[in-house]
View (cartoon, rainbow, N blue to C red):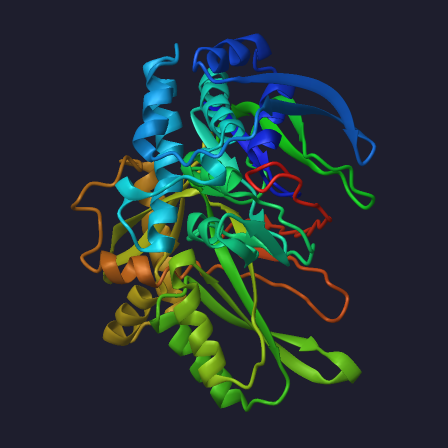
Length: 461
């Protein structure tokens, strides 16, 4: 699967996107022909420049200044008359429509009556149509982006001076992770926001992929502290295991809470849907003994679980970071023993015999019912599993093999996952997942900030 990754550490704009596409290998003459077919009085050229000491491609759109405010229908007519493929036209109009919907929401008027001000100018039309053509020519099946920095300060637009992010840009970036930035300039323009909001299938770090090309798209200014570029990675997605996923780790350090409250908190976290909740003894600042409450959860559970941590403990803050998890294939099964049926999980690894693990709750129930010590119940369950492996073998689990309490089994794995992290004034974070096998997910976060003036109010930065 062909994948494109947008590394927007310096933000994203239309001209940066065009430059990155050409730098990554998109045929510039094909882009030029597509733009020329629109019949606009403009020219599109590309030049090699340096930003922060790094070579990059700068896209320059030369067009006369207009006093024209176009509606969406006007822009659609321009796109339709171009010699673009149907897919290219549809993608260009998706981006414009995304932009129009954001403006309509901000101004509280119907989409059809929206006047495109800055983004209706010729150079912005070229940027968006060029981006649609370029991504189509790349043949990307999936587009992933880094979190988006917006910058801080003010920008002057058609409606006057506005704080950053501009209202339209902010509306476009709803639901998209924003990278913290104290750069006193506009880093992401409305056109850049519309492009990434339309194209990106997901947001996060550079995905597992085999890189074939890297494009550097230059912004207008050369900044003293960092490269003012958009990086675009093109390649093939690595063959990911279907048993890999990404979850989130939440952590907080506490040194002034009774043990009973800590235990109650972990119980509440598990009841609320945490994949796991655990406590690690730590030594905090000034050599104070304390505990770290750790939580592993799906992204959709973060808000609810953080609320429990803030409500039930004395913490003033919770750390959060994504964790990559690689799991062995597993399925719920039942083994027949002299003591009765015992539920468990069967782990499968390619090229190795399946591994059986009895469920704790099932073994406890059998132990209480038969008065057989729990450790003996475990031994009997393992013996029954080994006998089955040596006789009938472990095929795919049939409905008859699966325990009736599969829902409970899914919730309480017995193969609890543990994530251990340390954040004791030295900024190291380690995450270890355990599913009776040991998975290690390491999360590192780097913030990059720059200063970037807004040369043209419409898009270029």
